[in-house]
Length: 199
Image 1 (cartoon, rainbow, N blue to C red):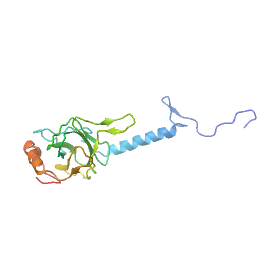
Image 2 (cartoon, one colour):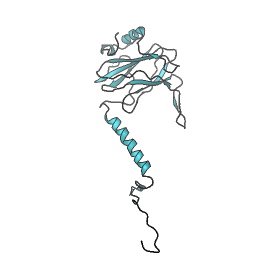
Image 3 (cartoon, rainbow, N blue to C red):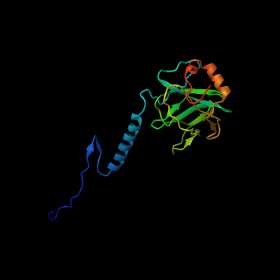
Image 4 (cartoon, rainbow, N blue to C red):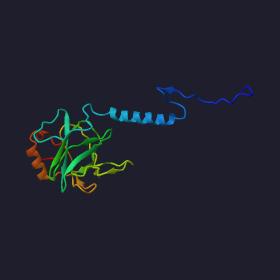
């Protein structure tokens, strides 16, 4: 270094792309963002081809979309249920909006075959709903966390009967009276083979 010159900074010079610095002081943040993005893409890459993040619950008499299984969630009362969220071993979660499952009713939700670690995560009560505060705190969602199962073949899978109002208040055993009512109301779905329960 010649006398009278400023010391030179040793290290990589910043690299700019599209008006943004992608290396230099900000690179750890960008690298973390890129890594998180890659992890999300990797988790989504393993999803079945017919995966839906927001499936519609099946109505009475509606035929089953081809190549899918149907998961059943019963409502043991006393309140109605208007939202269900299921989780599995990948991302994203499965969210069922716009439903109204009355006490003693059963929600039927089509899901793709091939999901593993499938579980009912939470739900909301009719008339209350759920949401998030600006600080990220969730309101209105009632946790369930049913045992995990794998959706391996087309058919009917009974996930749980929940009792709205109390967290983790559920049973995995179907209510026989609810099943009889469901079978009469859904003759097309009743033709599917029950996988983890019997009529």
